[in-house]
Amino acid sequence: MPPNVLMFGTGEYTTGFTAQGASVSDKKTGVVALVMLDLKRRKLVGRLGMVGTNGKKMPQIRAHMQAVLGDVYTDIDPSCIETFPADGVVDADAYLQAITQFAAGDVAIIFTPDDTHKKIALACLEHGLHVLLTKPPVKTLEEHLQLAEVARTKGVLCAVEVHKRYDPIYIDARDRIASLGPFSFFNAYMSQPKRQLDTFRAWA
Image (cartoon, rainbow, N blue to C red; front, side, top):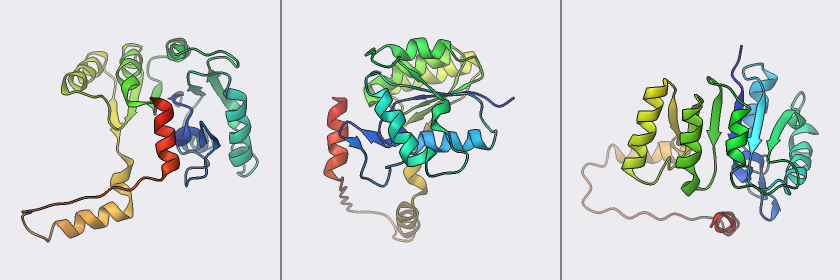
């Protein structure tokens, strides 16, 4: 029997929905929920849940996902996703109730603001869920070691998702660097679209 999956976070990377509404980035369909819906279509996962903190947004999120996924792709049905908290309810601890609706051996995927990772991951691990965390998993080495120890004690997996390692531009850079010899000086620049900075601001 395939595992059930509980997704933590209802924002752009999970659903394609932001504080400003539907994303206009390359993630307008979301990533995490889309992949889980495809795995469900292929019968590789069972029930799907999604938890945020603001149930007032859930009807908009469901409508968005239906428009960009359900109405576009064959056999992709966003309405199958159980959402927490209930519509109209704002609850920063909704994740605790959502976890109780899933069983040991199920999977948790956490795409939430960085400072929430530890408490959500610990609650999931203690409940016996396997955990996939987006980067950074936690903020300190001590917290990292704590997660690792709880996962070992409970006999579950706890892994970090580092998706950029597979982007062609990073693979190319890695391959080129290997032939350049020892570095004596290094300078890097990162550019971020302003709309994504607005998303991060909404976390603060």
